[in-house]
Image (cartoon, rainbow, N blue to C red; front, side, top):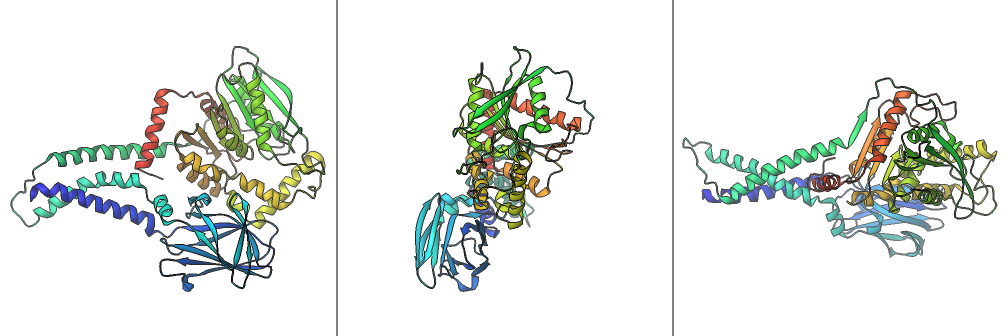
Length: 540
C-alpha cells in the first residue's frame, strides 16, 4: 500500500491543480461583452444569456441609448461565466443599427476572445448586411429583432484556461501533497512510518524542485521588466557647443502632400551608431517643439542619425484639410515615407534602425514598425492609452475634437474642419489605431524588441493601463517609468526650451541603451526562456 502513495500524491496534485486553475478561470465573474454600435434614434438594447436552459428573462440587461452621430461603446456584464449563447435585442422607431467588432473582455478592458473569433448572426426578425472588418447593418423586419452573438464554447474555454500553469501546478503541489499525506498517516500512531522512495517519487520530487526554482525565476523576470527611475540627482543641461548638423528635409506623402522634416547627425563622419526616426505628439509645432529638438540633438551628439518629421497638419507640413477634396490622415504613409528616406541615405539600414514615437506618434510607430522588417526596435513614449474608453465618452471625444481643431487654428488659422471631415471620421481614425489591436501580435513570441516609457506624473489610470498592457506582451519587452516626469518630460511644449536637466538626461540614457542594443544569440535565448516561463507561470 505504501508503494502506491506516490500515485495517490500525483492524483491529488492533478486534482488540486485542476481545481485551482478552474477556480481562477471561471469562479470570478469578470467578463463583459462589448460591441460598437451606431444608431440614429432612441434605441433600447437588451442582452439575454443562454446558460443551457434557454434565454433567461430574469438575467436580462437593458440599456436605453440616446442617438449620437458617432460610434458608441455598448458594454454588458455577462452574469454567467459559462454560457452557450448570447442574444442581443434592439428596439427603436427606425429599427436598424450598425454593429461591429463584438468581443469578450475581462474587467481590465483587454480581450479574452477577440472580435475575429466572434460571429454575429440573424436570429429573429432581422436582416444582417455585412460591411467588412466585422461590421454589419442590422435591419429589423418585425417587432422583436434579435441578433445571435455566437462564440464557440471551445474558444472561450481554451482562451481562459492557462494549460501551461496547470501543468506546472502538478509538480509544484506534489511535495505539498506528499508531506501532507505523510503527516496524515502518522497522526495517532507512535510508530514511525517508512515510505519506500520509488523512482517515480524521486522523479516527481526532483521535478518539483526544478519547477519551484523556475517559478522564482519567472516571478523575478515578470517583476524586472518594469523599472521605475526616481531621477533624484542633478544633471547638466544638454545644450552646449554643437557637435551635430541639422538639415532641413522636404518629403512627399504617397498622395503628393508636402511633409517637412529635419535630419540631425554628428559632425564626425566616423560616428554613426544607427538611424532613428523620431515621431512627435499632437502639438501644433510638431517636431519643432522643444522636447523633440532636444531629444534629436542629444541623440545626434551620441552618434545617431535622427530624422524628425512634421505630420500633415502640424508644424511646417502641408494642411490636409485645406482642400475641398477629401484626404485621409495618413500618418502611417508619412512614417513609411520617412523610413524609406532614412534607408536610402549612405549606410542606411546597415546598422540599427529604431523608431521612437511620443504620444500621438506612438500609434504610427507601433503599426508601421511591426510590419517593417528592417526596423530593429520600437520605442513608445507615453502612447495614447484607454482609447477604447475615452473615445466613446462624449465629453472626452468633444475635448479631443476641440483640441485638434485648436491645432489647426494655431498653425493655419483654420477655424473649422471642412465639411467632409466629420467627428465620426475623427473617432473612427483613433479607434482603428488603438494600441489594444496590436496586443494579439505582441502576446505571441517572435516580435521585434518593443520598449515602453511614461512619466510618473501622468494620470494614474494611464499608468495602470500601460503596466497591465506590458504584462501581456511577450519578450523582448521592457518598460521604464520616469518617476519625476510628466507627459512632456518636464519640457514646456510651447515655450523656450527650459527643462529639468536630470529628467531629460536620464531619458536620453535609456533611449540610447534601447536603440543601440544588438540582438545576440545569448539574448535571443533569454527571450525564449522568458516566453516559456510566461506560459508556465503567468504572473501578472
